[in-house]
Image (tube, rainbow over all chains, first blue to last red):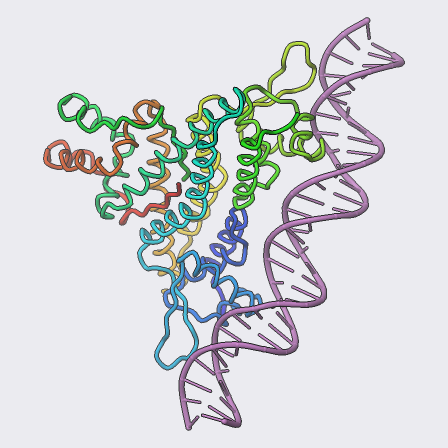
Length: 198
Length: 198
DNA sequence: CACATCTTTCAGTCTTTACTGAAAAGACCA
DNA sequence: TGGTCTTTTCAGTAAAGACTGAAAGATGTG
């Protein structure tokens, strides 16, 4: 099987981007290939098309499975395992966000919380804890928000995102109705910081 | 200069997380150190505290500067350059988001657009382009949204994030006012997908 | 169960990236 | 301008990570 120039360019780019991430080049390529492939592919075909060893494909697919980014299925009349990405692009995004939260955010919050529970030995440590608290609150705010909006229906989420900065008009509207606005304010969080990547 | 156990634990963790990213361990450590340090530090002290070579510190700081994550300043009576992180945690987040957009998202969108401009040679390529279009629209939607809300004042942004999923009540409210709601809909984008990390 | 097909594992090798020390370049001052 | 302090560069080396082929392990099938 040969790749069209279109497919080839996409796969190449995805591979490079992958390596700028934690993910290695070949894993990125596998994912790109599966994404544009109309049908599930077996490991040996992936290895052949992308021009690396069968065992490398096996390891890459294992990693992608651990990220829940590919799913395995059997096709009738073929003993080989076939792999594919979720059909719905939104689903991919949701999974990515969840896994990154689980692997990167949660451990970090956990470390921060542990450090914040320590009794400061001196003023220096007290200052450090203040900084850590800021970081903690910011990350938590962003994470909570992200978890929350991901529970929305795709249709609602789309509407929300399309609104962009226009959302502020709704907030202003809300603020002009003080009886509604004041009721829901929570008494936690110092200043609220936001770490957001796109 | 010695690190307190608190500082040490934080720096270590940040180093590990950094290497899970594209950023290497020592760069992560430098950043963590500057973040919790109350005052700007010169390169040689960074190298000493973190226990690596002066030249390594130089390279790490250069990288952090290219990310605009540290700024350089001179202290009176000291010829050495001193480095520090922005004071405002929100500022850090904004910078991170911008840089990642510039380095990762924009090139990807650019590649996708180029590929979408190509004339499909056959049905296969046409199908691939459909998939790429989905990805493109999703990334663009998320990026636009992110750019947009980052223009908000920190105070407004905080309010928005605190609202979390509750935002949907405002959307519902908006939708119940059809004259306002229909006016702003744009006619572009297939289904809108969102790739969002936290 | 013997055979065929497919998948995983892993020791060894190759490639890439990180890090260092020494030397060069730059900045400031008298 | 020469001398001192500081930063950057870079060739070489060390460490980490990616990839392979061969062998072992699974999973059927007749």
